[in-house]
Image 1: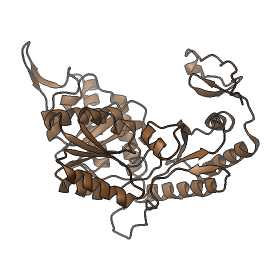
Image 2 (image 1 turned 180 degrees about the vertical axis):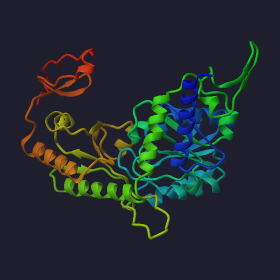
Image 3 (image 1 turned 60 degrees about the horizontal axis):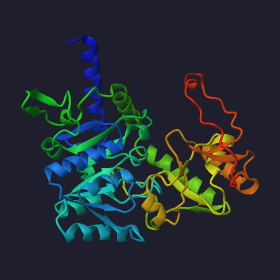
Image 4 (image 1 turned 90 degrees about the horizontal axis):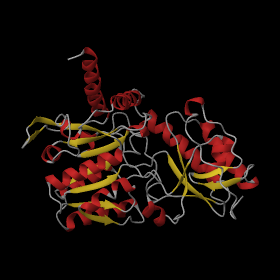
Amino acid sequence: AGFGSQVCTTVYEAARDEVGRFLGVRPDDTVVFTRNTTDAVNLLAHCVAHAVGPSARVVVLDLEHHANLLPWSALRRTVVATRPTAQETLDALAAALCAEPTALLAVTGASNVTGERLPLARLADLAHEAGARLFVDAAQLAPHRPIDLAGLGIDYLALSGHKLYAPFGAGALLGRRDWLDVAPPYLAGGGAVREVTLTSVDWADAPARHEAGTPNLPGVAALAAACRALAALPVGALAAHDEELKGRLVRGLADLPGVRVLSLWPDAGPDPAPAAGAPVTDSGPVGVVTFTLTGHHPDAAAYLAAERGISLRAGRFCAHPLLHRLGAPAGALRASVGVGSTAADVDELLDALRSYLTRGPGWRYLPGPGGWVPTPDDRLLPDWAAAVPTAPTPAASPCDT
């Protein structure tokens, strides 16, 4: 009843509309706010199990992030091996979908390792022709390309706010409401009900059915603000910026000794520039570049962060089967370009890597509980984090560098 509460409700529901518009939902779709993409995929798996049945067949590729691989194991999951080309991979998916009745085709919108992607409109057609629905893990795609659920024929989509420059802790599951309305609540609690007695419960419809408890209002509002900011960019500007910087980085890496850029398909080239009034294509790789440094120490990411102020992701990126397939089971380095990245940023990374490969790091590094760190590490925590305990300096080991 309080005005402040009414303001909060207005902001929360307006955010739902904003996120839905940003992703092109259909009028009868629903938007459920979650913690992140992983939470959203698990919610959908829960709903599929109840709406279709625990024996529902779900087809996935072996290139998926763990968030789009593990939740389906509670159902009847069929994993299709990635083929040498994108077209052969599409053909393999089509064959798998037609092999036996399938409830869902679950794919990544863009690989979180290589940035490569399959055409979503074609995947939707394949799924629908086989009587299945299409789910897209858009965590890596949404920051790099516009998405139109209705136009592409996507049935369900999940994303994380932090990939869109919002804070951690807010994500969304969007799509058709029938499966979400049939399944019992993902979490049982306040806000998910119409009426409760000591012997019965009348659950609300989605999205409230799956949003029990106090919502993350600041996170949801920030997610909507990020969607609004990205939607305000000129048409085609995001993709053009993305492809220009990715190309600059890949060309620069090709000139460095011992660097191997990881990729899946030779036929997953950049999106062609659309003609006036033509739809945006949906098959070119996004601005994610993962590479290995042959014969070099795994402290490279720590060197880039500590000595050059450059943050790259290092490891296996929650995609262990794919890293094995790409011949990098021990891990790799991943650089991601974004709306704030510049050509100077790319050149700085290339210069830092060139220095590392030719002269090595300037500091000494040791493995610690959270990864490789310089020793001694004289970097100071900011005042606001001063109360956070720091990890002890690791002891020397035979793999010192």
